[in-house]
Length: 249
Image (cartoon, rainbow, N blue to C red; front, side, top):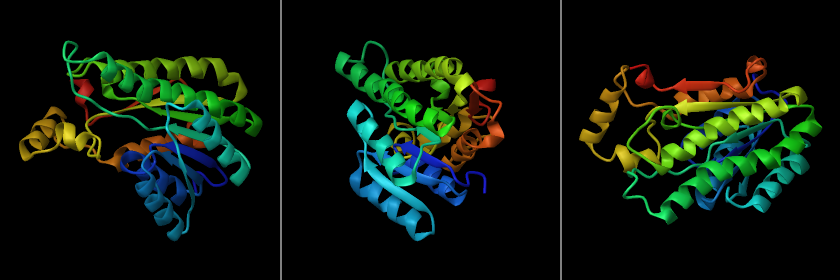
């Protein structure tokens, strides 16, 4: 199994891409801690993974709260002895242009999507150092690479992209890798009300991709699994674009 003996912490792990990543990691031998503010869904995902033979612990995690991150990392270390993998997956999306974005909206998106990644990374590094190294995978977006119809979301994901590179440079000599993943439009609870809430919306967004389909959470999870595993041991500071060809146009 590709993650045998590894311990992974996944933010936003209650549903969507995070839950898919957690299930896949557990199937590949990892012990998984999932953090989220969605208690009921988090407990359901925890139970489903454990019932299928994996090892999973749910913790309540507000990614904007530094002490909550410290507690989540402490849970990983106290429960499983170490922390090898962090997936900064939690995020929110708002479709808006510059003039329609309020200051409060900007702050909320940046706090969750960008500051949350910073706080998670900051909390995880000491535990990874103690473990002799580790892999951090940050979920950015194609909106962090090319312009789009969002302002705060694109800015937050661009911040994640460059924070990833800075982290990679700073900690490479300690055996801590950091890479970013850049999904196209993925069929998740976050994107469904924003872009996929009608047949026309689904058709339009599928057509934006040369592969003429909307991505599925598994499409992203396989990429995250690769970066988390030792198979990617010579990759750090890299961008893995999984977008059905959208940004190749």
